[in-house]
Length: 142
Ligand SMILES: [Zn+2]
Image (tube, rainbow, N blue to C red; front, side, top):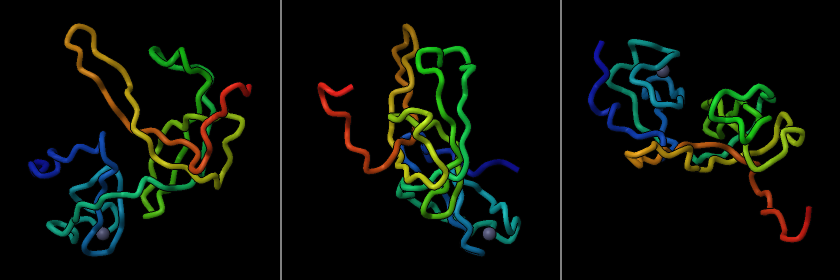
C-alpha cells in the first residue's frame, strides 16, 4: 500500500508530530498511516497531533561503543521515553552524565544540529532529549 502524500510531507525531524487514531485514541510517534492497535479500522481516521515533547525515561542503556561519527560524545545514553501523550520513542539523552539518568526521570525534547554534509552544506537537525527543568551549568563550576 502506498503511503499517502500527506504523511510524507510531515517533517517530524523538526517537530514532534505524531498521530492519534480516530478509532481507538492510540497515539504514536513517528506518525503512522494505520493504527498499530486497531489496524484497518483506523484507515482514514488518523489525525495529525503535535506532541508536547515532555516525557519520562522508562528504560535506558549506556552505549560505550559508539558507532562511527559518534566518537566525540561517547559514552552516550539511549533511552526509551514515554511522552506525556502516551507515545514511546527511543532517543539519545544529552546534557547530562549517563550516570545521572534514571527510570522515571522527566525529560524534554530539544532540536540539535546533527551534522553538516560536506560540500553541499546541508545541515541535518534532529530531536534529542535532555533532563527537563535542569538549570544550565553555572560558569566557573566544574
Ligand atoms: Zn486505533
